[in-house]
Image (cartoon, rainbow, N blue to C red; front, side):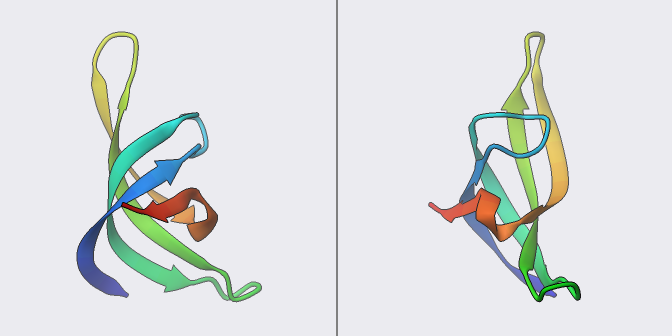
Length: 65
């Protein structure tokens, strides 16, 4: 389900430990267990340059800004 984009904090997404500013662009309820997950875009800092990441993450990784 598309949502109006909302700023959020992304906490310890897989492969990118830390807290990153993000933008929630969609959400959906998973059929198994009925848990919510969100589609977010966020930028992580690597050793060389910032990288844009887009991923579906469980809501436990997302916090309001």
